[in-house]
Image (cartoon, rainbow, N blue to C red; front, side, top):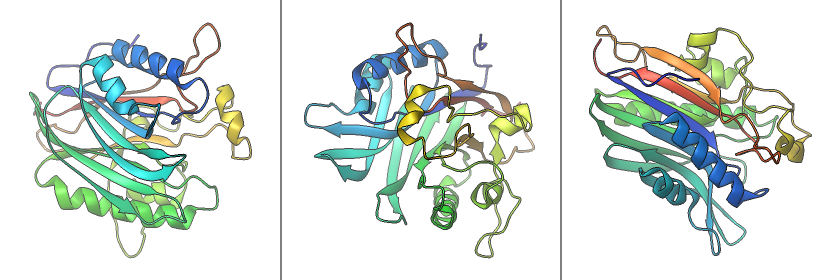
Length: 272
């Protein structure tokens, strides 16, 4: 049982929706029910689908959860769009999406400025290239994502969430964690799950989820979905208070919300 969000903090959940694969209408209802139980302030979504016959999945979830939303397409296929979205309980006062370099596929980064009672913050989500040999592309992508965050954060704390398709010891993730240099650049982000659980597995792409069998040629049992937080400030804002793997159980008929599990993070936004 996950406790309520502490005062002055925000709860963020990130989830790859697996577009329209599988029993997508039932999966979307399961995702809505699971998110409602978690009571997040912000939800980062990847692989959000819209086409004729399928309403924008972010809009559908936002309506079900009484939240605001912003959507940005990243790729076109099958007569529709797939992209990124933010859901928010608080006003979204600005949003912007930019494309990322990618090997013949659409990839993007989406930022939204959120005005919450605890304070203003920049919320950014992305979805990096998925193939195991796409490491050089992911390195280029994280450089662009990090630059995007720096360009628009201003004085605001930043949360960066999404499906990074890489495990913690990959150079693209080590760069974000402040442990590797890429293109002569360094940065530093808090890996919320690592802050709370150290080197625990925390799989978000797990073989026990039967939907991962669709891509069984990929390595199983990996932590590839992340909630990153900008550095803790002297006043305590930016402190990671909790981080858990969520939306990681099927219903009684064996239907899972997605082929990915979600990541929940409680982060202090107001000064402690």
